Image 1 (cartoon, rainbow, N blue to C red):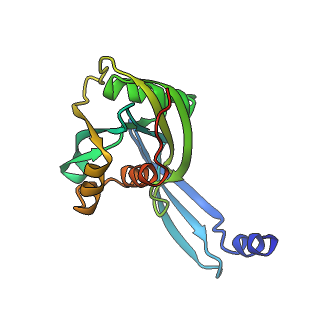
Image 2 (tube, rainbow, N blue to C red):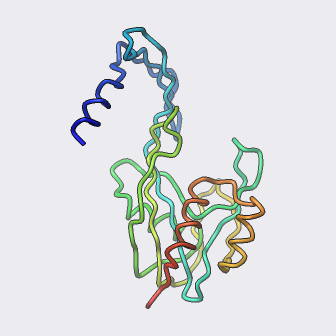
Length: 189
């Protein structure tokens, strides 16, 4: 392990200069000049993101809760698990609870942190925390004023078909659904 760590250090790209060229509501775009392991310089464009959560919510009937939402960057409606960005200072679990309630109306008695991962490390630092939510109680959606989506509950055989037909194109959702099918995360409320 120490040998791998030493070799990893040889891959580092120290920053020579950094400039933020855009700051928006959700992201910032930064351009860095770095020194490569061979001593040459290169430019790296980096999307800075505050982080996010995603929720694999399953009902007592062993259905997964999904949302259909238009995603402008993709110019299409995507099928996704509930998710959203972290607010400044917000803990990931608190954000997961908030997003599940806002998008679906559900609250959950049981929460399990499944994994945390980078979404697109080639150009972005977004780090998303994946939670499982079980023992759900239905309620009313509390969507943001600019948020429009449809909620659906899907049984595992239909999820398997959707995945085999490549109807799910969102990476966090694909990851979560395969996790669900592998682990059979059933609620015992």
